[in-house]
Length: 160
Image (cartoon, rainbow, N blue to C red; front, side):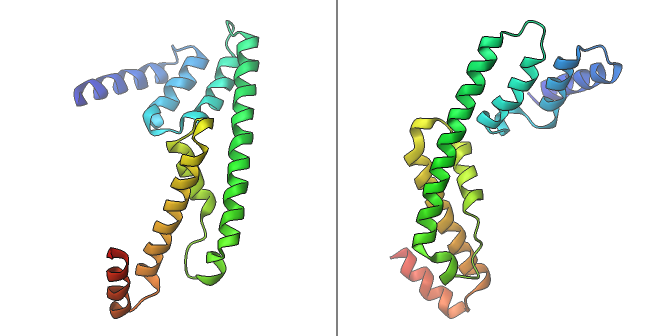
């Protein structure tokens, strides 16, 4: 498998350098060589492909319009979910009580979107975001705000 990756990567880069690939395809090849598709967030990647597809001669304008509408509807769902999560986080009051902890709710939410991006998985995104927030808080407690004795007591409490 490693040999196949090396072979295709080398030949694709060679073709890009020679300039004998159609511009839209060259953009897709360059993007694929940067970071493999499986490492990217599917829905944000879909937006990039909409722009590329829109420039193709054989593009179907109805398909582009439908894809953009779907993307925008999903973005609205994500915005609503994030607004709900921000309300939960503010009501919890952890950011004001634990000032040493990283306040990265949006980062946690975006990570959950990468895992559960389909609209029907709002609850999954919510719980993943909450779990990530508490893992970050616990990590910050261990990293910045505890003596060895306090951390041993905290570890015992968490294990129980």
